[in-house]
Image (cartoon, rainbow, N blue to C red):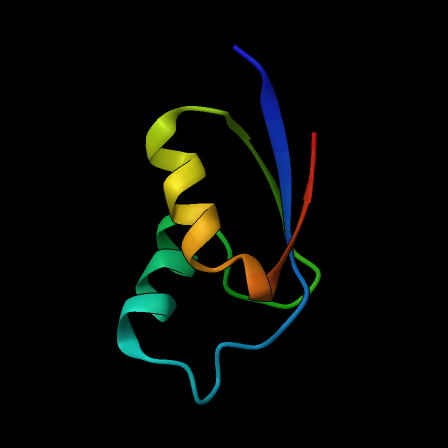
Length: 58
């Protein structure tokens, strides 16, 4: 499977609890932290929900 690189570029301050928990579930939590995930439908769904806080690279 393909991998995607996800970087948090915006803060989760003043975001709802669901978005905060999604960021934590992705392994992020601090600005400019980068993680790699396999591009499964579950991961892509989480990324889509908080895409305004992230930078996504293939």
